[in-house]
Length: 392
Length: 173
Image (cartoon, rainbow over all chains, first blue to last red; front, side, top):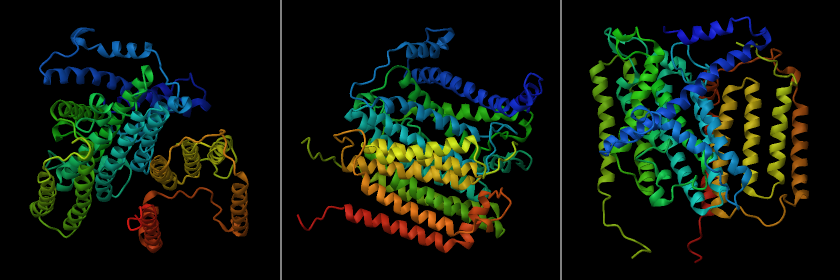
């Protein structure tokens, strides 16, 4: 059961249908096809569940007309997007306007290729998997710029600059909080990082990175940075249609807009998958007695839980202002992640020096808590009367 | 595992990648619209990193994308948008090619002379030298830590210098 999909692939490969020369190609196709099917389908389901969940949080029903309980709403939405007219502004740079959604989707799809979905279920086991993930991910900022600039619309351009500034600012905490895991694991390979988190303390407690002071802090920082990096609420400034004219994709309609939408969600899945591999033990079961369930089940179960939390947050928190967003990134997230690196080093060396586990927890956790309290204080006192320079 | 291709062979993949890289570079130099130039430059960076990856230099290839596409290209974009508008009147292609050609020729001569002087035969014969990331990291942090720090200092100095140059002179106003 655990190796169901791996065995299925080997079985299909063993058919005499393919000539030997084509086998590497078929093997690659068999690896790529599930990713191309599963994640867009997950995107479709998530849009429905998100709309239903948000509806419930806001005390309404949500979509309930198409299919049983409105579960086929995504098909209706998709058909609507496909059949909509594709409008390109006359002054737009047509080539770049067309290329921008493509440039967004391709790197995100590539970043799925290094995530271990289960035991021996990784599309490409790269030695520098995390580096690959962030390297291809950095191309998405360029696509946002292309979309905003090529639309030849000042609101789109302003929105693109805003989104790029946001993504660059939050990429730093994202990478540095992943760096702590890399530092302690001593490898950049996601497969090895997940394998190191296997095994159980006292036979039942999982040894995930989450259950260490630096891992807990790192995961929370990573989670917040993920929200900002994938433009999720409360950092969804690019989607603030009513307040600041959305953002880089205002001039997109029809299926190109749907591609931006898809890219955003796929990016969210990819970064969540990375977070699961780094902090939440990847495909390892959460309890020692639950290892009989297949590894891929655990990966997708964790992903589902994370996505539910994302929806919950979207229904709960209000949107941040652009300056608050930047202040939070540079004055809170960055110092905290840098401190977390130091704490992780302290955790490692106190382990080498043979300190008691409880003592290590108290010291490392205490440092993080004190820093959190001190840094958070500077935000509390900032509430003053707003002064308007031009609007008075 | 597929057999690792001989890095020195000029196969179709190498030809396509070099063509893309060179075409991107030529377009980046000859187009008039600065934003188009930057995007063509990104194509060149991508092609270069693909060439590195084909040489099994995993770390260099990925760092190339990470640093150049992720940071340098974005930096140029911001610089262009913050200093001037990307719209330029006139034709699609930029003029002033004579100066560019001179500089390019000088750089090419320097490179050809430098490469001609190195003894390529002295390089290890085994074509596949796979450098794992750990090995690169060890070398950077132990053997070459001083050059690394000096480079970092130089880049920081350049950055601060650029910021000072770009700062408006308050006293003269």
